[in-house]
Length: 295
Image (cartoon, rainbow, N blue to C red):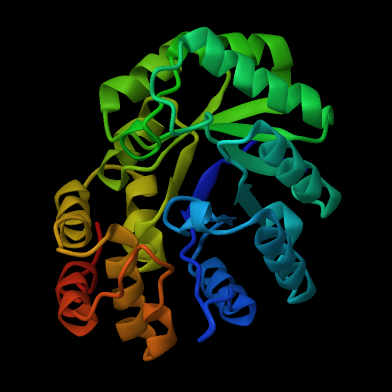
């Protein structure tokens, strides 16, 4: 069991079958393809994976299928954030029962008026409810999506209270000053970043690596960022292609995957998202950034 998520992890997209169910066989193949390209692990049902659109039962069944397909438990993490604390506890217990130790935990979202103490109380209720020393949780800070930030003081207090159970923190704010604040407040946490252009400088500043969505479609470019500075502009241009489209980040990313693999099944998303139809053109733009030799 690893102490925390470190290195090169992908926030995996979730392929869907025609009936809208998770296509576990395709997901297993996607994970194996990423591993061959130097990826250390995959996080399932995070933001890129449309995690909040899937039930506990669906997430558990998917992990079971991936384990049967030969994906090792130590190379998987799972999104375990829910508005209901009881669901977070149930999801985390189920993951641990299947051999997964890495769970990304969002603060309970929707209510944006909560206090820092209330946020800490919610995390504490989850960890106390799970009550399992095998857990290696990563606090998940993505306030632009969840609507609820994780204060640096709360992260520090939780690490002090729960030790290695609170193993890491994923900072997907896109604000490097926030990453630096987390590093200063809780240097013992393994802090990964989700904003790909920040990877090189985050690692240089003591960051643990990345859990990111762009690695689904440009793993070699993301990997180059972990090796050091030099490709920040190219990485930012690739991110801008996906972020600046008229469709959602996940729908655009899936459309590019469909074009890359020749598998139109990747286009499927769960409502309220809508499929993106511009995959071929977007793939060509990504290819132009990733096909030249990387620094």
